[in-house]
Length: 296
Image 1 (cartoon, rainbow, N blue to C red):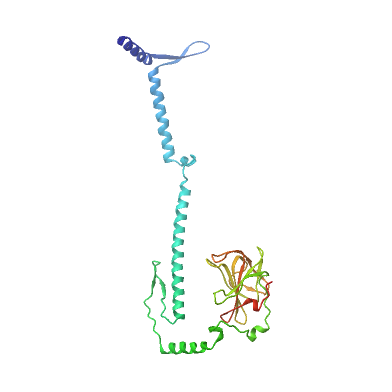
Image 2: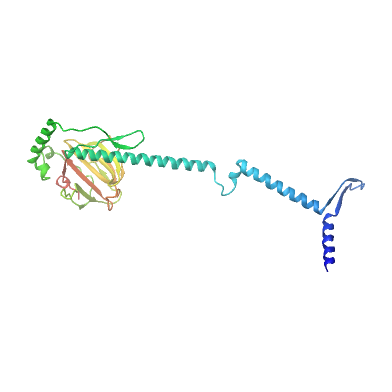
């Protein structure tokens, strides 16, 4: 049995080693053109060598030539570079916005300290972008103390400052206020609760108009109040429109009474629905707009 297996094994090896001669002859004269001999084993070697050669050549093409970008699913180097640059720019912009926010917070805190008679903390932005307090020392002088005392003495009997009661000045008697928007009042003026205007409910895409001739002094976005537009009018009157969807005027533009300035919206975290929050100020004091304008 073992001898038979050995004979079969040797017979198989002999078969693949056996050479076969291939002869090319002329079809008409049967003259031999050329001939070559090859065995099955040689043929296997040739096929294996050719396969390895093709694989190596393909690897070189993919690794060292741009042809690899045509392979489905292979990342494009240009796109990857663009994404990296975009991410870097976004991070840099975010850092700048955070630094600006810190400066504004310290500025507001300093203003409040000044208004409360305290020493302000002046924000200074260094080259490194770190916001620190300056070393400037603020000292109260006798003249400052006397000025503050006089001012408080005047305000003691000023109904406008102490009680919030604003009398209709003679300058306002002949002024016609154009209604910024026609609609119902959902939340009235309430100075004690910090609501310095009225909330007007109107259909979506309603047009908000200027109440008087004036100039745009603020046209910006805030997180709490959304799109805000503020107009400075004559006679020390200021009107403010908050929570707008779109602003139609830019900073510094002159407007006429009744001219469209914004579109009603629901922007800002303090807004709970589509409406207009309208404020009217006179000489730095909040007025009840319903005392001067008919909204419905």
